[in-house]
Image 1 (cartoon, rainbow over the protein chains, first blue to last red):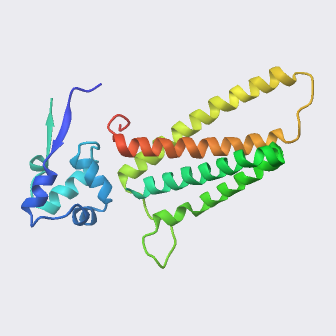
Image 2: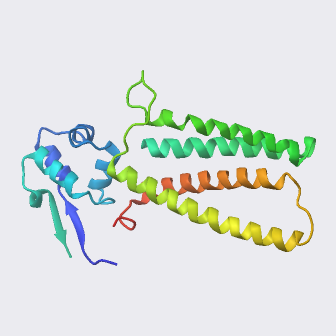
Image 3: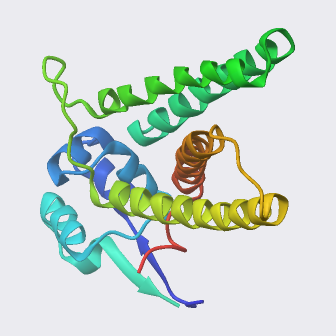
Length: 70
Length: 139
């Protein structure tokens, strides 16, 4: 099993961008609210495309949203 | 609750109702006639309603990437469980009726029973994956 994990700052970025709701972020990225919930709870790792879409919504770099850590 | 979870709980609820009515009917009408209550499982055909996007149009909506992973994994596990049970059933039937005859009820009951097993295992797996997350099954 891998010793690495991918963490994210989606929740913080949502609040920093006009207190965006999970529903709004889900609508802008083309996924369900449950997927956003799973992402924030780190129960799901997004595909590369979804990761880029999320970063694009917040107008930040990919590395500012997702961190690959040991 | 996600639409996949609602769908799974609906399927499980329908099965529980059917199984309860079957169990209550067996003492009165016998097993063979009581199995008719499993016809209630035909309500599973309403599952596309859980994936509506527009209230005026009943159609399967596109699943997002996480839902596709869950659905894919649930079907694989359901198929594997069905296959194992099918082999066990065939071996038991062969051992029990070797050289003899099998009732004509066995084939349709086996097929329908297999279908129920697939749907139940799929739904339970869906619920587990929705709650636990999919990190351990993602590529």
